[in-house]
Image 1 (tube, rainbow, N blue to C red):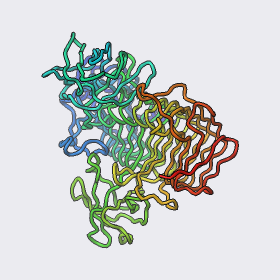
Image 2: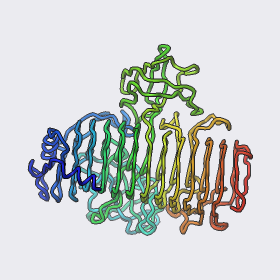
Image 3: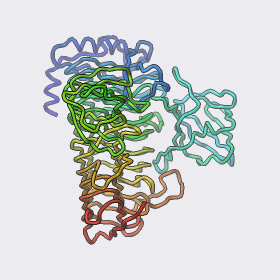
Image 4: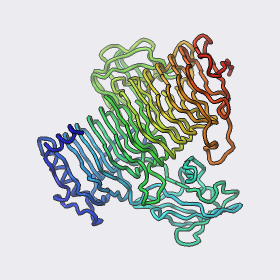
Length: 605
């Protein structure tokens, strides 16, 4: 803190209001912000761009429109124009601090709130960001009958009726179909459901902001439930940190994000601390994120996410991964033509001269060779030609994958709170040291921690080599189909002596579960599951009141080796059965310490 204060004291200070911004006026602050950033970029030393405390509005009319290809967003068919409409653009800047002083930036229209592109040493702090009219519409069920329900539409949502259908509208957008979620404010739980608006035979307006949905069948959701609906097209993101380093986002609030959330792509040494990613209480809204909260793809250095609150999303709060590109052709002994395979991930630079790469057999996810990039030639948004310093390794073939191992980060995720999430809490796939500690995962509908790696579906790489999951609290996460901690590489070819992941330690956690297995692991060499407290959850049925079903075993191991299960305190009543199920796992590869009440049983599939 002293170092931060000393650096700020030595910096040149620029006031946003000196460039034409008028807080609390409703006038567009975007042109003033652009002028202030341009002035700040001309300062040779450190500079603080200060926003006198107040409310500032940002409109799309004067916004920059730049083309960025961003991972996991939209395909060419879903969104033919990849240009982003940007409220705040910080490009090719260094040693710049954006000081909000507690200000609120209100976004109008459908925009990417912030882009940090090609920057070094950027700090964003004490700033709140929100949408005036979020692109997720909300309504609360007030009454329900055998084939209808009545809903009160949130004041920040707008609609129009056409031919008995409801269309949700905003500044420059309109939709009828899309994903829907239900939120139970009593139990503070959210899960995905079928879109009841699409199911409706007819929708009528009972009064302004009150709608009746006539259904062909029961509504399934009782009065008091909040319905959240969006169109599903990720044409923008909440914020984009691109090809930048030493970026810090501190003590701030992000209260709604349209699109994928805060996306960090081919950036390094990033820190997110003290972020409040929840709806502003005064709005009465229940949604913060249209999709993910923080999504990191192809980053390196150290990534720190600490002491943040992730509440009210429509997808995973944190996802850390790389990208497998598929070999389309080997035109020369030292060349490979590569292709982006997932429809929603393409177009960006995935390799740079000097990068180390690894060749991976897609079906097994086992690496069999490596190389160093000499040159990269973009052939199209979908394909590139890689020339290596040496010949392609023997056995390489079309259909195999390549991972960029240089752009893989060290990760530290600690002290965070996750709630009202319909999917997983933290996804992490990196070969460097990763620590997930002292977090609270409160009622994830799916797994609390998920480790994947695949080269045939999402193409999100890569293997885990050093992962610690410790001193966390998992409260009623998952279900019979979604273990609390899930290590699940998507390898079709599974061999007991060839592991995808390794070096995973799960210790000193409190796992409150009545339905979900505490751990399900596949293709891992080296697991230590130790000193965890496993107790019944105080609630069951995290999927909107559906009848709960227990997992068949507390721990499941498939094609694993060098496993130690020791020192765990496991409640004998109210938790999944005290079995360790093994599959393609030799009995002498699993050491279960006596006194835990666990029995090992080998199963066939």
